[in-house]
Amino acid sequence: MDYIPTIGLEVHAELDTNTKMFCGCKNDPDETKPNTNICPVCMAHPGTLPTINKMAVKHVMRIGRAIGGDASMKYSEFDRKSYFYPDIPKGYQISQYEYPFISNGELSGVKITRIHLEEDTARSSHSDGESLVDFNRAGVPLMELVTEPVIHDAITAGRFARELQRLLRTLGASNANLEKGEMRIEANVSVSKDKTLGTKVEIKNLNSFRSVERAIDFEIKRQIKVIEKGENLEQETRGWEERTQKTFRQRSKEGSADYRYFPEPDLPKMSLSEMKEFSPEVLDVELPELPWERRNRYKKDYQIKDDAIEYLIDSEAKATFFDAVASELEHNKKLVERATNYIVSDLAGWYAKNGGESYEHINPVHFAELIRMTVSGDVSSRGAKDILVHMVENGGDPKEIADKHGLLQERNEDALVLVVDTVLRANSDVADEYRSGKENALQYLIGQSMKESRGSGNPELLRKILIERIGNDSNI
Ligand code: ADP
Ligand code: ZN
Ligand code: MG
Image 1 (cartoon, rainbow, N blue to C red):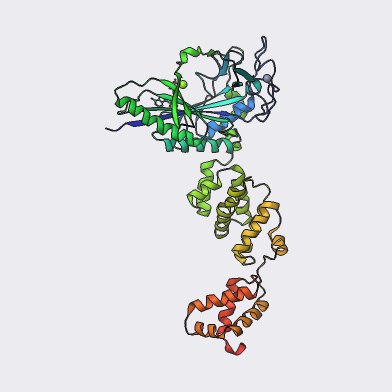
Image 2 (cartoon, rainbow, N blue to C red):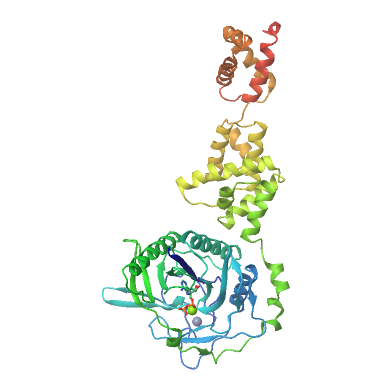
């Protein structure tokens, strides 16, 4: 029988708050000067006392609500998790153990065990035999989400992690950038031939969704090999090495007994039910449209294809831009479909080539106007692409841009009749071919008319006029 892989994820995310978790220091991930956002509390000076950041609790409660988790309304507390390391000034981290804020829930089809709140560690760096510690990050609010061991392949794990990132960003709970360490994923992997779970290995240093997927795949294969050789797997922590695309042993896994958890005596026990702002009713009102709700709406209202939807909802800014455009187009399905195409192909192509993806400097009103111009035939699709480039680069009204750069199509029928007549006079033989049933001849005449109008003629209109004029010899 084949081996069944099992995966459970543990995800940490730095929360977006003004101040740190237990003191008034600024929570500023962009601060580059080391040890500026520090105070006696987060530096663990004797005699200092922590206080709880309400915004951080709110973020966790919102996330819990979004995934349908159970909030510990009656009783919750913080605990001390002791260990000794230079990045942990108190000698313990304030975390939650027995009473996490959130239990249960589900995201992307994966059962969630818990979400709790804790504080981040300082950032240490080692070079030239010297170790430096920057405490700006020490005490930054950190949430930890743990899934049940219910994932069975790398792709599902990757999809879950991406959906979680999307949720955190949608809620404004975290920037959740993996490269910046704002979101950190640990994957627990085991293999087994039956329903009892095998020995699990925890993988760290996963700095991208791709490495999450690759490390899981690598680890599944490695574990099967070890078992097939008749050797025993050890419960251990392994790292992921990007260069070799392999996991490597870091240390044997410490048990929770090593941390000597006990309730934090310097913080009050909490009964969230006594605070109105954490009630389900208030949280529900505050929740924005969630990623899966948005996905369903795009499907239902506009019948957009799945991969286009994924592209649109990939960032808040992009989805917001799309929604504004759709609303400008009065949710007309045809127009929105066209707008979607321009966003997922032309605009995406421009950003892929030039970078700096941002939707803030394109006015959705202007973008919608451009879409209408392509439908009315005021601009050709070629011209629309040129206008779009101008709009991305410098902003501006598409009508003005079209005018300034001669990209408007001639829609004045009288002017085009003159053009068509000139072409027909010069090509009477081709007109005859068309009359005798040669369809291609018309295409040629449209081309000639476009040329004659120096590209300003609307091809649809030229076709209509040509057919009229060819059928009416007396006018020529
Ligand atoms: P620990 O006490 O070692 O931290 P937990 O039971 O708290 O272990 O689980 C930590 C993570 O590991 C969770 O995401 C859980 O789903 C996952 N996990 C637990 N057992 C296994 C296993 N046998 N195989 C894969 N993942 C597992
Ligand atoms: Zn501080
Ligand atoms: Mg655990």
